Image (tube, rainbow, N blue to C red; front, side, top):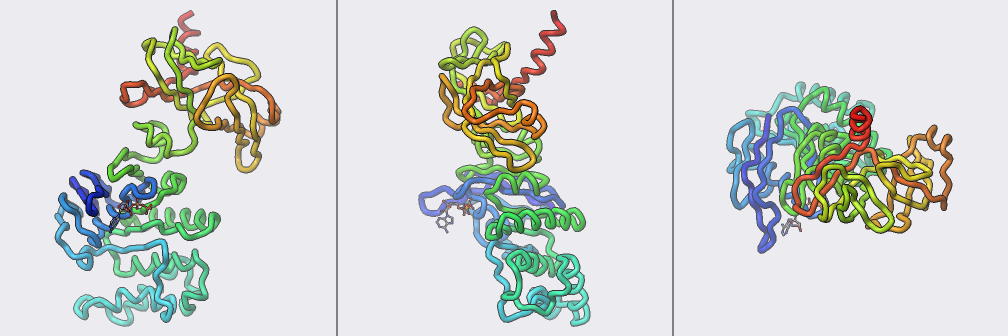
Length: 373
Ligand SMILES: Nc1ncnc2c1ncn2[C@@H]1O[C@H](COP(=O)(O)OP(=O)(O)OP(=O)(O)O)[C@@H](O)[C@H]1O
């Protein structure tokens, strides 16, 4: 069941929580609402659910206007951060609760309820825990039961508000993988709220980035990461290294640092954003850049080595971060305190006019220059 959000506005007193939000949520996909605290994610989810009303605008399910439909009649499953399982009911009874509470006409027979609960217990891979009480479950297990309970009435839409927010990092990761696999098998239309960019990028088919009650950008995780359309999205999705300076003689210049910017008009201010994996390190400046940086720290944890550096003879708002493979690290053996030079491969240039960023690929311009020689 696809969902259309059509020009939704919502104010709380003088405060605008949602400002003219329009959005398409595709059927059978997992969509993440991603944004900082207070950006309006939960308010939008609650309006979709019918738990909150909007001041104007419409919500459509599969093309039908449901704006005036009561939450009870929207056929939606919910999972919230704090598992609201009934303490005095067993796991199986918790899952059956929604079915048992249906009006007599719609309620399945006892036998069918038992079969559905068994199937859901298998789906959440916890059939052995059917007779336990919530207090006898781990946080991750409780969230799985909450999900089974939400799915028991076979909703058309599943809404999840920070479903893994209260769990520790390892359990969160396991549950994300598990939810993704479950989704791939059952294809319900799901929307989940998160402020964790890693979670949104890893789990979803489509990411909606929100800021101050507005939609900043909507795209697949890969496209969003590769082509952010605004500084906000850039800053929000992972670390960025920045160079702010003036364009002079086809170069972005600041203090002792410069980077070649072929084809960019001179005498204007510009900001260059570079992701940690779009930068290499060398012991000397290259023909395309001179960006001296001193190594402040080296972290060997994880699949790549993360090197933090401080600009030398120029300034940057943030510490620079460069990722290096372990084999490259062993070959180059950089050491804390040494002076190195950043060699940009791909960068994203914001000019003072505020337009969308321009992607600059120095590897490509180098190759083009070499073939023109
Ligand atoms: N019932 C309410 N009355 C007044 N203000 C509210 C109400 N509900 C939400 N707000 C405000 O609207 C803004 C958006 O809140 P919302 O919960 O949608 O943000 P969010 O992006 O989900 O944030 P978080 O990640 O912190 O949950 C916040 O500034 C919040 O204080």
